Image (cartoon, rainbow, N blue to C red; front, top):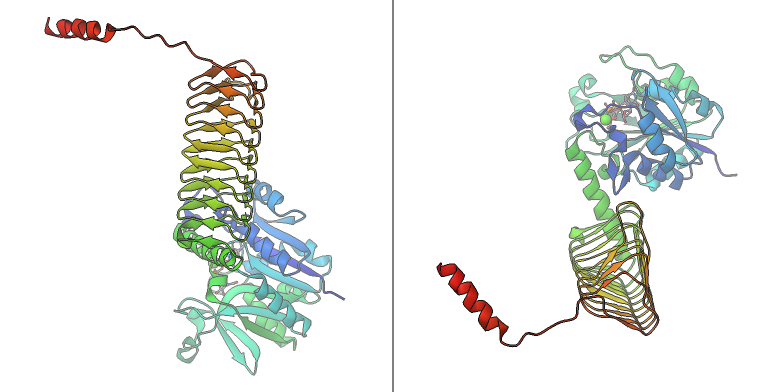
Length: 448
Ligand code: UD1
Ligand code: CA
């Protein structure tokens, strides 16, 4: 039988060093709050229940995470009296009874599921407490893990270590896993007789050992346990997340000419055989189908790029842009909430918003869909094989029929039937010789 698992995410910290009005755990990494990454890892490690411990009056944290962490319960830690105290704020959740109880930090978003799975495997093997250790380049300031014979004896904080213990390179990464049957007993026994007067979750190591329970440490890569305290940490974490994501994309068959200049979001989907040129930003909700080519300097959010479509350079796809197979959106074009039909082309300097463009239509340079009248948004429909001449304004709501032609420079305010040609501009007049007279007049005026 699969073991049941609860993950408690500690998210009550103030994060004052971020110097932000936004609570620390809500700062985004890859487009979603860092605490949401922690929850994703927990779920991937098989944790069916998630309890988030938030600070007093942090409705904003609750509201922001409720969407991202569907089904999670929230618990308030009124005063920040330490990590053990924080975990106990979720006592109700623990009391529901789980085989495994994992404690993760909302400000430590790079932990991979394998780490939590390894911790759970130790619990399944009989350990009552598992500590996730790591070997930092410089262990100064971290609690050292005192081990003997594969068992963890204690976690010794920097200021309490002997000279010999200072040489221990395995440190506490902060994350712990507990046997659900014993965790409340351990936590209830934690006192606050230490320099900071806090209830430390790390004290459960010695408490469990005194009760004759098995306590072990596992080792995680340094990257996985990096906590965010400052904006610089946040940037470092983002960089690591991006590198991992690019590596996954490359391994999945995506070509990136300069991967370090491509920025992805947590939900970006890019199919094999897509080519991405340098300097492209993928906001949330973007899918790129196989064989598409993304030229340099593009920005996308909530958009779909169809098979073998071509986008950019310098294109912006906003929410609801839906580029169908083999369509093209070229330089200095913006597309919002619009379908660009199969094989259709929007190649230069164009704004397409609230439009449905049929297959193989050609939209000339400088075309603008005038979709907004200051109050509402209106639809522009452009039929299959239609041809819109350059520098046309299509004043929505309006429909351009299948195969219709729009003369360049038109302002189209009435719908155009299938296969019609629309001239929406003044007729040209030529006045023979008039330029000579005009020039003479202007010259005389300047002299006077
Ligand atoms: C913790 C570990 C330390 C480890 C380090 C690794 C403890 C006691 N110490 O120290 O051994 O080397 O992580 O980074 O566990 N929190 C609450 N409520 C509280 C206190 C903390 O929600 O009352 C949350 C914080 O927001 C944070 C996390 O718990 O997300 C860790 O607390 P923090 O005070 O940052 O612990 P460290 O001093 O970093
Ligand atoms: Ca910390």
